[in-house]
Image (cartoon, rainbow, N blue to C red; front, side, top):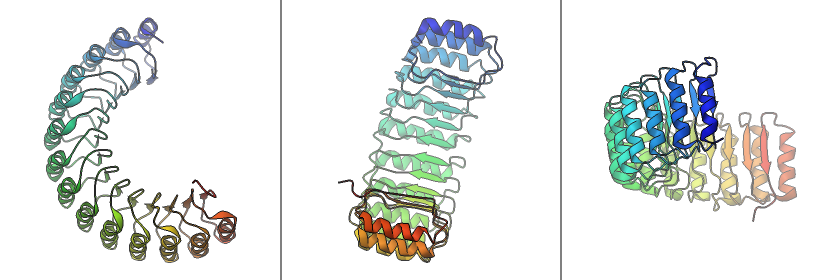
Length: 394
């Protein structure tokens, strides 16, 4: 659908009060079509969710939607990701957020709002009292603008989820976000994956976690975090009582970092999900994590896929933990280069374990014999739901 098709749809929406969700994904309505939709939103009182994703929306189109938001009192979700909105369009949307009292979800991922646009939205956060989810991923925000977002969080009292993935954010921004977390009492999810936050930035975030009592999910996947950063986070986990999900996949944690995190798991009583995929953890790190699982009673999901140096020895350590652990339900050991011996140890563990529901062994070299060991174990274990395995992925 193009702009000319948006006009009759707009006319219909001005009279229809029963439709609540409209998905316009991949319809190139552009600025003219956005104006038609904006006219509809001024009169429509039924629509709550609008998805103009991939609609060739530019700054002019964003202005039309922003104007509608200042009058519309029913729309709660506006998803305009994968468009062409730059800082001017973000400024218009920011102005609308200062006045709008109904929108709770705004998705601007994969636009081009840049640092100036992010600053406008940050200023709006200090006044808006209804928005709970803001997605600004893939927008080249950079450190300076992200600092302003941190400042906005100091005053905002409603936002619960902030997505800043892939925005060239480094240690300086992490410090500002950490300062905000010390005082913010509403944010529960912070997504910072695929950025440039290193050990220093993580130290700031870890310090904030010792005081913050609301954040439940922290995603730091694919940042240059090493064993020192892991140590800072581990120390925070021994004091934090609210974080339930921590994603450190695709970092540089290593065996030493895993040791620090394992020590924290022996004391932490709230974390339920720990993701450490592709983080350079070998069989020594697996042993430390295994020791932690003997004592931890809250962790339910542990992701260790692509830990190439674990092999059979690492699988053996984790298998021993499974014979005693009573809480872990999901264990991902995909592509850890486990072979027949490791599969046998895991199979032996499955005969004793009654809580694990999902075991991923994809891309390992367990072969026919290893598969037979696991298959035999499943005849005795009725709890396991999914085991996906492959002979080899090399």
